Length: 419
Image (tube, rainbow, N blue to C red):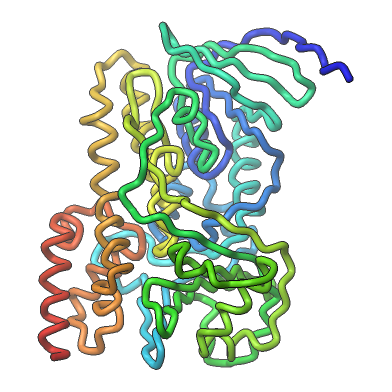
């Protein structure tokens, strides 16, 4: 059998080539297009396509509005979201995202990403952004101005000459692979098993306006997500270190149902649920890189670093990184000298590292003690609520500016009071 011959297409000259048409890529493309920059987005897949990261944070809404996509998102029929609920054994607590320290939106949506990402991409295309689906970036040359070597599904090849590359390829991590930027995460390896269910929840006390995070009754570093959608369905998943999940037997669906039924609250809540999508697993998902940006490229969202799904920070980091990178990139395209480490990487990592503080403290149990503390100071709860709502870059919030020290102080207070 002969392979299909490579056909060469005409080269393309742009200001910015963006790899990936997910939230980071389309937000960045829209913002650049607004400023008259020539942009092309290259997406390997065709939309709609499945993705996790379905519970948005309110902080995202300001980026969606800046990109001129708010009306489209609001009209798409997504499930309204106003907070997060947490449950461990007989403890249950909620965070209302409108009751927070940081100004800005306090509500958002829970979204099936196949539809959500398509809404953003379609809106960007209507604005005039060029998006090529089914196109793969095979190689890049950064010797001079960036050159991307691309092929489409018919094995037709062409090159894109760009002044800059934004990698918004998510878990595809195109530039980290091509440029050998991959670096191990400092977070332990964890696995997730997940699916979509027709939930058939009849409990009138269940709040569909909030994501529900449940903790395993015996293993506090195993947790579950339940994200209600607007169509009587939910995204359901479990996360844990591989050694805690390895005893599970059977198909992925059987494994997921086995461990879900170990949490009495979920077992009762989902007694009539049906799995409606093939179960999937994601292993060793935490990732890092040696370089986030240079004067020729910047990594956005998961292409740079992915922490953990526990606080739904993925899409927020993606959109935050897109807007921050665009701010620096517009200055560079206008002839200013940009220090990408100082102007982009370090400010971005301040928020990422804030999230990291709380992710690590969640898994060692310290932040769970804070979450379920029954005598919370209202002002402190508002500050923590801001971070859970995505405002991890607000350095007027003491729990952002000094995340580790402030968290340790409040952990000690909770422990002393409980003792």
